[in-house]
Image (cartoon, rainbow, N blue to C red; front, side):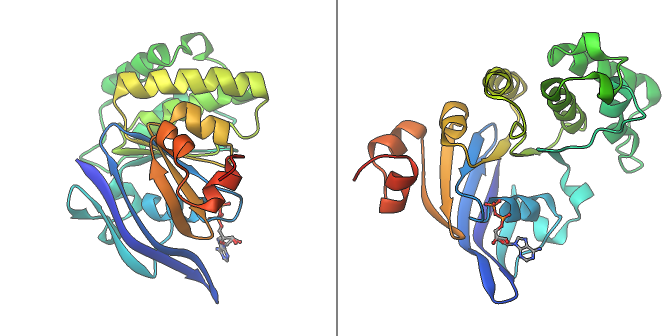
Length: 241
Ligand code: ADP
């Protein structure tokens, strides 16, 4: 099982923001898209999510053409840096929300939703927050809840766009370890966008270094560190060629 991108190209006016992206993400992998601001990471994530469409190229999940599918049909879970939880809903209602709006046929019954929410609360180690409102949570707690909400629908792919970007260094480190554990136990396929190389290298099975709409290098963190493929990668990682 895999998510396969081939020659993904996206232009905004005269600017080619993605210039022929080829990338395959395997089931259960945690892949980091790493690159400076403006390198096209978010645009690629939006295309995978079904929030934007490429001008050329293909995107398929297990051979199924995702460019012919809506966002809802793809069943994607998403967490953003400023992912707005519903302020008027408790933590458990926020997590349940994604399930209550699934298309008829896929939507579980009330009892099953309650069971899923309880299981996630305990799995994510946030059971003690169940009845709180978002305003009563720290930034780190909010992002744990946001991940719970994204995971409730059992997404085929989890997309995380700088989810810890607004948090301070210690909380980020704690959340990294927590996310890595959650990912490993749940077996989710995860794509994580960051401009922070330390975060990418600590978290990911595979790092994809982007620059100016192209992939400069793809590899395991140690491979990239030991053998940066281009002068850009070496510079970006603070290594000398
Ligand atoms: P990153 O996530 O790596 O910071 P983005 O994918 O957000 O990069 O942006 C890549 C480039 O595309 C930037 O130069 C940005 O200004 C441009 N861009 C993104 N979305 C749009 C849009 N809707 N219209 C015009 N330009 C856009």
